[in-house]
Length: 110
Image 1 (cartoon, helix red, strand yellow):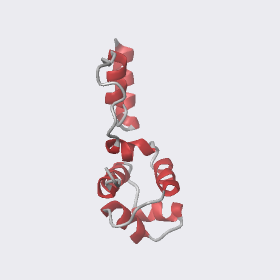
Image 2 (cartoon, helix red, strand yellow):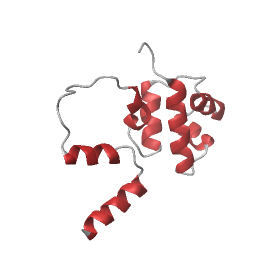
Image 3 (cartoon, helix red, strand yellow):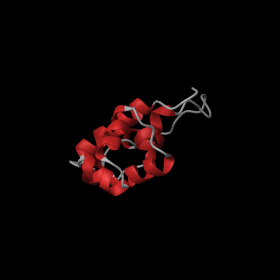
């Protein structure tokens, strides 16, 4: 892979923004840019800097990994079996806070 898939990253930003009921204008104001720039990021026409991506993640209350996690291509140890704990963490990694709270409540019921 030579470059990041900014279209996919932008789609994840848009997905998270909509889920959080946040407007492009709100993110634009936080980043001190035009709303059209946020739209261009979401459509993959503009490439956000690392610092902008971090600010967006903070504003949308998620990790940068939520946006770029699909870009990883390495597998440190293909033969290593994942523990059940690792599998659970992997499943929860991309869930939003609401889903994580629901899972936590279910665990507490066990």
